[in-house]
Image 1: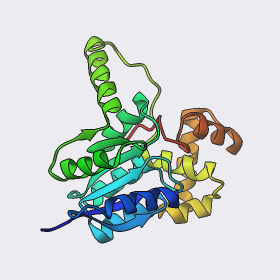
Image 2 (image 1 turned 90 degrees about the vertical axis):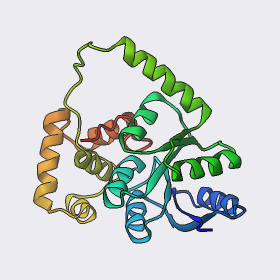
Image 3 (image 1 turned 180 degrees about the vertical axis):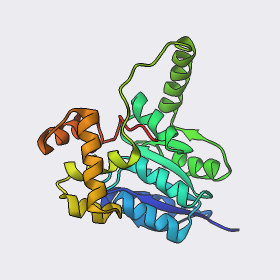
Image 4 (image 1 turned 30 degrees about the horizontal axis):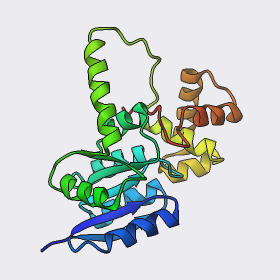
Length: 225
């Protein structure tokens, strides 16, 4: 029997070790790699082409939602299950928008985690019970609001969110350019767009924006484009 290959992506070593030890008891599941940030998760997904990535949302260099988008684009056969300590509406909506097939709270039981891996591997979606209830409520609200215009400001692109995270983590333009694989000129162009969209003109204010909107801690305001 071919085992279900899994990559664990979480910036906390103790969390990865816990999941690895838990999954080692399953005859049909195999942990083939571990990543401590979103960029490593994408690189490992490209290299190992796992069946499943268990992806934390809050990770350095590249948050889990952007990493999910990039991994799925590079390896369409891989499926992603998001891990989070929170089940807020925006977290769940953005995980689904990123292409995740499942959303698990970190306090989920070992049995539920293994069940999620198996069901998602077979093409089904899987959500922790609390998350499933929220999704049902969101569907009900969406039905009630159908036809009401949305007047939100222009959203940030995925690239702009990447750059906001790196700036907030203290990366200079050249370092951010190297990490993102683009030119310094392109980074400067993105920064100008950020200034125009957000009306934010200094790094300290941009960092506060990243924290308040969750881009660093749990990326709750990300709009994928």
